[in-house]
Amino acid sequence: MNAICLVIDRLHAGYVGALGNSWIDTPWMDRLAAESFVFDQMLLDTPQLEALCRSYWQGWHALSPRLPQDRPTLPALLRAAGITTALLTDDRTIAAHPLAGDFDELVEVDPPWRHEVAGEGHFEQTHLARCFVQILDWLQSAPRPFMLWCHLASLGTIWDAPLEFRDCYRAADAPPLPESAEVPERRLDARPDRDEILRIAQCYAGQVSLLDTCLEGLDQWLGENRLAAETLLCLTSSRGFPLGEHGRIGPCDEALYGELVHVPLVMRFPGRLGAATRSQALVEPADLWATLLDYWQIGARPPAASAASLMPLIRGEVAGLRDRLAIAGRGSERALRTPAWYLRRVGEGELYLKPDDFWEANNVALRCQEVVECLQDALVQFEQVLYSGQVADLPCLSDVLLQGLE
Image (cartoon, rainbow, N blue to C red; front, side, top):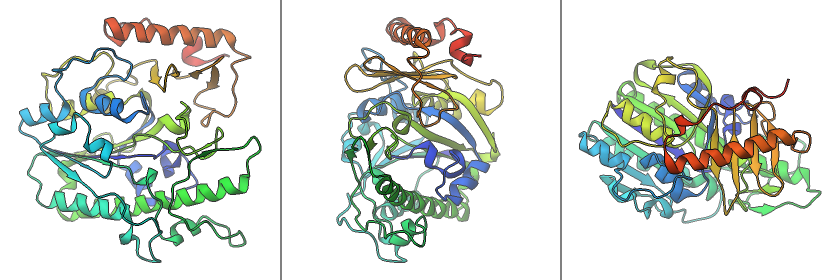
């Protein structure tokens, strides 16, 4: 058995076709969702890449203290089991990560050498397409079994899809869209230009459509080379991309709103295990570490305070794994998600009803002060338990925190 993990930076769950009921046209991702187990509530434990990689590769929550220096990584554990591992990335930060050396092979893709959109009909000229060519080159001679981990920063680095990819989202009578390949990043005014935000969103949509085209090509290649039937394909992201929902275009200060930390997680297994299934279970990055070890049936793995294998969910043995997720932001900023609420702890705190308020448009903190206080206590309790034991030892949350107000 093999695995390909595609981690696409700046891809938010709400912009992935059927995964988030988006207006962006992603036919291949829609088909992938129909063939896969889809986790609708995957939230990062941090948007900081170095700590996030430790969650993915060591099963270590970003809020956990004192990471043991001798804690084995996912690639090291797989190597011991006879599985070849490779890390392919166009992000110098990822390539230079202290844990990257544990992969058997590091494939570095050159960053974009030109910052302009590709010519009409020539999507193969884009940086993202070149990344996927590198992926196919590695797969051509990959020893089996293997795990290929691909971290692509393209969506947050350059928007160079041909203009027709973005123009398909523009009304016929609307002004032309920007032709720049630069990725925007700025705080918005109190009264932002909604037409400008729409134009930026349409340019982003064109880049997501380009990604969909590249993914379709990879999938076709896997089928033609008989790898699809024996390879787990996992699609997720390391961060979303704010498009004006809370006064930000791009990451800016990385405020812990859903548009930054709510990302897709889609897993297509050999033999169609769990196919066409969607789960509302709360999932975090460290779970992927535990899941891949479980997928290869590697039993002797180090304990983790919060990571849990997703395989029981995929096999239909359980409906959920936890009742809360905690997120670490810059400085003292924190967030807590339960099935019914999302608390952003900064200043006086912000509170949003979940899953109904998908984009966190209605802050109800002033009307639900008791809920805010209870969630803040639950967050403190979570951090304290990380210092001393397993998150599974936490007492269950109250019905109000799990189910909301009647």
